[in-house]
Amino acid sequence: MNPETSRRDFIKTTLGAGALALTAATVANADTAPGPQLDKKLGIALVGLGYYSTDILAPALQETKNIALKGIVTGTPAKEKQWAEKYHIAQNNIYNYENFDRIAENQDIDIIYVVLPNSMHKEYTIRAAQAGKHVICEKPMALNSPECEAMIAACRENNVQLSIGYRMQFEPHTQELMRYSREKVFGEIKYVTAAAGFVNRSAVSHWKLQQSYGGGALMDMGVYSIQGARYSIGAEPLAVTAQQYKTDPERFQVDETVTMQLEFPGGALANVMTSFSINTNILHIVADKGWIQLNPFSGYRGIKMQTNKGPIQLADINQQAAQMDEVAWCIANKQPMRVPGEEGLRDIKIVEAVRESLRTGARVSLV
Image (tube, rainbow, N blue to C red):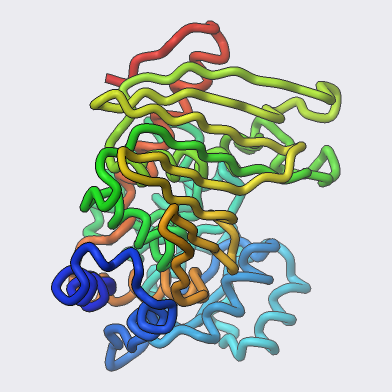
């Protein structure tokens, strides 16, 4: 499935080079056209009821057309009652971490969304696959590449699909930027700047500030920047050189601010940054014949696209709803995922190379 086909075909066949001058109204109408819809919604269970599940995913599931919130997995009994009442979840669809494997018997649940600390992604993805359930695993995929490979293998062995929660790949402006790169609208991409960070004021006990849980800016926001560089250039990096900076070493036992330079085939370069102490969110691409910018580029809403030819305004969608709807459609129709497990693995391999460069101070080859 390719939800962008009709819009892209229109741009190419009707406007040609004039695509850059496409009006906001025309593009927005194309992006909000109804997509594929299943006759019956698939059921999803959220594993882990922290902020992202509570404030983002559960509300998004009230907007979806192919998937419905049918179950939860939580270690907090008080949340069981709250969620059951708010979302009309049947008692036999509520699990905890001890009885989770019994979800294999539940015909209401088709998909399990793993929304846990990074260190728990591998275990619950594999257990979900062994229960015969398709899996969405939140980003970053896992702590290291062997864990990613084990997750991919478990899903393959149990004949279930695996998708990683890179919601931006379902977002219209991001998809348009990827088209610009793929079709060389401005010629060859030469240089990319990708920066994603925020001031993390969490208590030092929060898992995102704990190394054992896979915390740190690189794993949290850095994968957005790495992804941005990769899909902007449309290729995999050949090598990386990285640097790390800390303003508060006592607070940040994990990485606080990381910068890196990625070298790509054909000579393209990317300067990538992530931080837990700097508010930033921008993706800027310089090509032979122009430039493209998303600012912000990885926010939940309000993505803005600008080129040297002027702004391009597309639909401001619910990214998570679009993501989960498409995943459900692909499962029901036995189609490959837009963002499979292999995509998460690619980013983790780059993260590992970044860490090696930080450790040694040297350029690290990725090939």
